[in-house]
Image (spheres, helix red, strand yellow):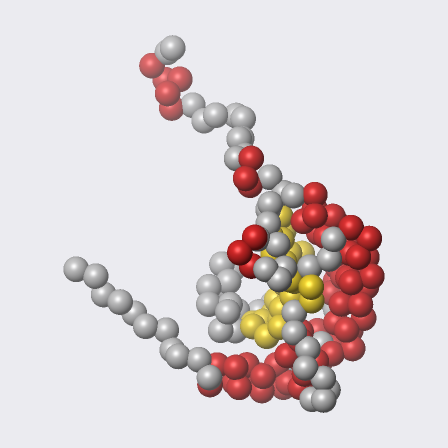
Length: 175
């Protein structure tokens, strides 16, 4: 071994077995990219980041300060497994504090149709993926078109209601 070999970067990237995308998450992401991506992109959003792991998928599109994210989990402790379409606004590229600046599609649906009580979508498996994602895409266009078109009135109303119920962030100073 030469003395400078130590400083060379390894050319081979290794992925831990636990981090390899699962068949279920890969299939889900493929269907989302085929069905939901074209809908979001026709409103001027551009694909920003795709992250597919063993137990989760996060696909994010951005348009200026707005973002749309499809997020799923089938992590064993997250049962019942679910996915969400999330809408938000951020000033940063690292999406810090997006939990406080985002609203799930089901909240738009509940506001528009108060007689229904909707929640996250169940995470689909196998032949359930296509119909579930098609339904989510239809509801995306029906309930979130205002956000996708840049009208943030309903989004801001829902965000204010959501954050009013939350305790503020606390800064902890360490010695």
